[in-house]
Image (cartoon, rainbow, N blue to C red; front, side, top):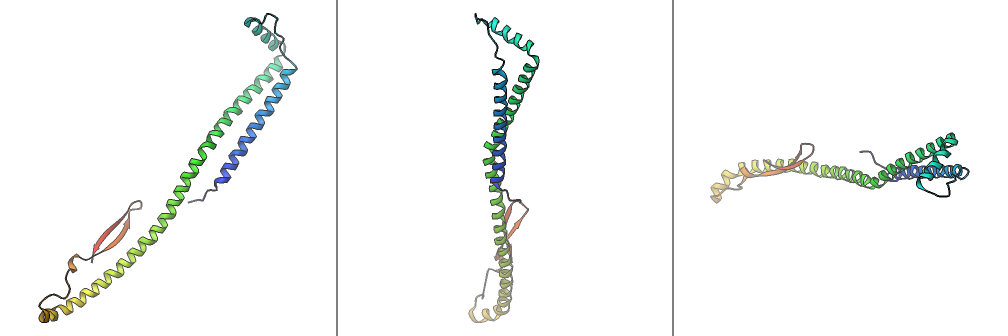
Amino acid sequence: MKQLNPSLGLEQMQSEITALKSQIQVLEQERATLTINNDVIAPEDDSPLAIVEAYRRQARENAQLSAELKGIDDAIAALQTHLQHKQGELARLPQKLRQINQQQQLEEAKKVAQVHAERINQIAGELATEIRLLKACADHLSPLYWQIYYKPFITGFKTISVPYVRSDGEVWTIVNRIV
């Protein structure tokens, strides 16, 4: 499994967020500069209808400025949406990194377990060989042993088993193989 460098993704994400914030700030300053020079003069009565009419008149008189302000507002809104998305990704990044780290630890532990399983199977094979050799000795000695001691030399060969580890790829099972 590919090793992930957690700081690389985190640093890249933080630099993207910083760049977005910087761009938003530049646009907000540009917008403020454009609106300072063209403040709408509201009528003295300040009724809601009068205020609306003053802003509409200003927009009609300065159509290009209004379009530019609208474009800046739209760009700021789009960048803020993108910024929120990036900040959400940044918040979820530690969980993803933790999950990847757990998967890496699991893979490493499986490799260690496989080494032990292979060793168990090797020892089980050696033990089975030794048991067969012992049974051959017992088979050879038993008739003479019976004649002298009136009992068997060794018993239990029918139920002797050795452990064996096998896997279907996901689940490992330890079974007893009868020797």
